[in-house]
Length: 375
Image 1 (cartoon, rainbow, N blue to C red):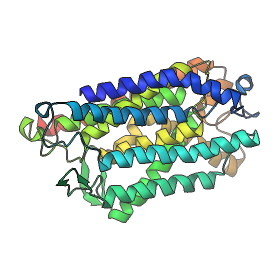
Image 2: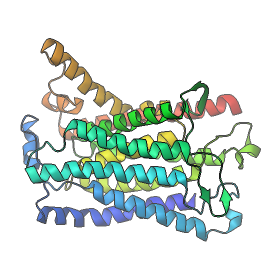
Image 3: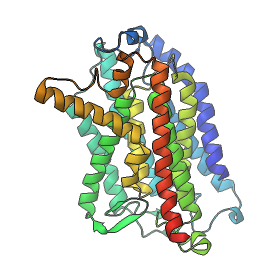
Image 4: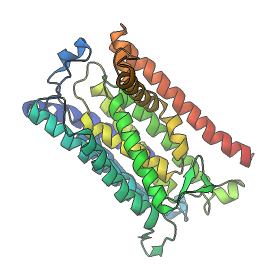
């Protein structure tokens, strides 16, 4: 656990220190966020605020992950579970960090085009979906087909399995490996775009993502303590068949720490925006955590705020195209409440509460299933 705590602290400290430096550098480069003119008029004052803050917390999360592994390697063997293989970099880490970085790269291209064009439109929606699909398909194939080796020990299990999952694999609902990769492409696109749509107010997506990472930190560490083949076999009659649960906890902790540090500068009034490089990378990583922890169907509950905001856009689009009437004053949903007279801070705090409720309910389902069987 100490490696997870150190990784989270390193990510927090580095993000706190580097974000204002990056903000000043982006400001000198005139990398300001273009603002939509058809949105709430209060947002026009934000024009020119530096964007692409996601580059900072992607970097700090990766550094913190490496530091966490260095800590694990320094621990005496008596302090680590011999079955956990914690000191080596794993295929799970490859999938999670790879998704994080490549989805962030898709967002970076979008941010760069927005800055170059001085317009809020970057790459097309189809191009964004395609880029995310390629990233998800590539790492989905690795998760479903690659076993890899750690040190001199050959590992037979893959990161993911061809089943739907809730708190464990649902063994009576097979998808085939190809079907599982297709599902993962959908989940990555849905989650990344959900976070992207949520990123419309200062600190909103940052705080919501931090809660999601905290949830997966708890899930990953609990799975590690009750891991099939490890101590979990002796602790209870219920264990989790997850390949690298400590790796899940380590990366979740690093990402949560980075979000906590970034929130200091991103909360209202924001000194820097995360941009699509941030929102798409966060969505990709959250989807990857659901895949590797075998909690795909639990993800919509943990990320309830992202689901609600995404559906507000879908409802608005369908309603306008079919009836030429709008259900909301503006979509995504947070802007509807702004136009209804709520202050930006009120919207953010109340939406954080919704995100917290989703996180709590998701963890409740996770632990309820454990207690049902193990109790």
